Structures are given as C-alpha cells and as structure tokens.
Image (cartoon, rainbow over all chains, first blue to last red; front, side, top):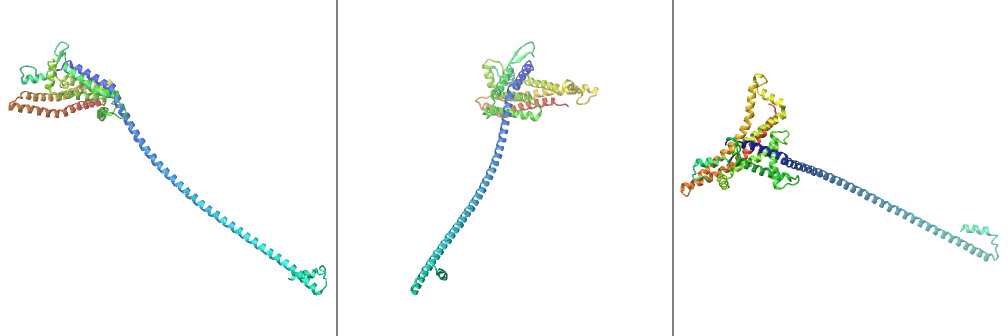
Length: 156
Length: 272
C-alpha cells in the first residue's frame, strides 16, 4: 500500500482510457441512440398523421357517398315524373286522335245520309212526274216545269 | 500459500504484497507490475467491448449486446445530465470510463484469492494482487487525474484571473487580510476532493479484500476433524455471503467514484 511510481502510470493510463472513450467510443454510441430516438419520434408522428388522414378520408368518403345517394334519389324522382308526363301526353294524343276519327266518321255518315236523301228526292220527283204524265196523258215539258219540280223537291 | 511454513500473518501479508519492479533509486521509484498489468488488461477488455459495439453501432434495431451497451451509456448519460446540465461531450465519456474501469477492477475482488495466488505462483510470480483498486496508486492515480481536470475546467471556465481571484477572495471576502485564510481553505478543499475520492475507493476495496483473506485464513485450518470441518464449512459459507454482499459494494463504489468525479468537475464550472 505504499505510494510509488505506479501512481504516474495509473494516472497516465486513466487519461489514455478517458481520451480513447471520449474520441472513439462515446460519439458513435450516443449518435446512434439519438438518431434512433429521432427515428422513433418521427415514426410516432407519422403514425399520428396517418391516423388523422384516415379519419379525414373516411369522413370525405362518407360525404361523397351521401351526395351520390342524394343525386340518385333526385334522378329517380325526375325520371319517374318524366315518365308519368310522357304517359299522360300519349294518353291525351290518343284521345284527340280517337275523337278526330269518330268525328270524321260521323261526318261521312251524315254525307252519306244526305246523298241518299237527295237521290231519293230525285227519284220521288221523277216518279211523281211520271205519275203525273200518266195522269195527264200528256207530255209535260220538264224544262217548263223545272221551277215547280224544284219547289216540290225542296218540300220533300 | 507456496511458502513452507504458513502462519496467519505470513498468509495475510503475502496476499497484501504487490509484485514490484524497481525502475530507479529508492523505495518510490518502483512500479507495481501486477496493478499495471491488471488495470491495463481490464481497461482494454472493458473499453474494447464498448469499442466493438461503437464501431458498428446502428441507429436501426439494435442487437442484444448493443442494447446492453446502450443501456449503460444512457444510464451514465442520464446520471451526468442530472448533475451537470451543460455540455457533457467530455464529461459523460469520462464518467463512463470511470464507471466501467473501476467496476471491472473492483470485480476482481470476487475472484477467490487463493485461486489467483495458486495460478500466479504456478506462472512463477512471487506475489500478485489481482485487484488494482486495492492499490492506493491506482485510486490516487485516478483521483489526482480528476484534480487535474478540476483545475483545467476551473481555468477554462473562469479564466486565470477569475480562478485566482476566487481562490483568494472566497469564501470570506475580498479584504487583503483574508487572502491567506481564503487561499488556505480553498487549497484544503481542493486537495480534500481527490484524497477523499481515492481513499474511499481504496479503503472499501482494501477492507473487503482483507475480510476475504480472514475468511480464507479460517479455511486454511480446515481438516477432517470435527473442528476442522466446522471451520471449513464456516469459511466457505461466510466467503460466499461476503461475496454476495460485495457485489453490491463493487457496483456502488464504482458508481460513487463516477458521480463524485462528475460532481467535482461540474462544481469547477460554477463560481462560489
């Protein structure tokens, strides 16, 4: 336990070891630790950001889904209304056409009736004239009695 | 152990003898070969392990060994940070070196003393102390190294004028009549730091080693008689118990040496 020159050797050894640790051991180790800490912190931040982005995307998706649904609903309602309208229009057109056909048929019938009537009249007039001829036993000038025959026709 | 006539006092004194080699005239100019070899070997092994990891340290996923080394580094770094909040680019590696080196040197205390003696005698060494920290030269070598660092940082932080001014004017005042008492007190304070630091570590380890020797001495009277068997069993059990307790002491002393060195150097950064 005597103090001797070993003291200097120990002191110098101590300094050499400290210098070695200071220069070659400590910096790489502490750098690696600090760098890893930073990486972990960055990773945690990124995870947090990702979570936020996910929530945002979910919210966006939901709102666009809702929009699409609304739009589809509107389109459906529109098309239904449109279809109804077309049907109504078609109905109206068909009715008009039918009315027109009926009216024209009636008119034709009336014409036919009138024609038949006028033919009948002429035949009756001719019959009457021939009857009168027979009665009078004498030829009657058709031209001379045209007025009278016309009046007769009108009376029929 | 190797001597023919084994007496209690020769057993103890033999285990307390360093292997010395004279390098000059007088008792002072000789070196303790065992202390130097052991402290160099342990320092190189301890720092070498750290260096191996530091060389291929990755900031990615660390292996188990790197994790263990980083655990130590962070432990030391946090301890130093708590004591000294400033720049610890030098202070933290200093503390790490002290902790690792002192711990390994103290750890040699757990080697069974008679095994060490048997092996070294077999190799031809007449004496061998395996624990460098039971040599006052080692502990004082380190603690006076700390004193040099205290002086260096005092001058660096406060400047030559500032530090000298502080040495002569604190703690009593700037009155010229108080210069001498101030300086004397500061000098004692300054010297008390390395002396107490070195003595504490040396004393703890020396006393622990001495108790191992006394218990080992009890083991030397073990024999196949009843009393001899009791002595042998008691020696073994007590040595084991003391070794378990000593595990705590060697870590604690290494930690104390590290913390106090850091505190002293941190104090050198502050004014009175």
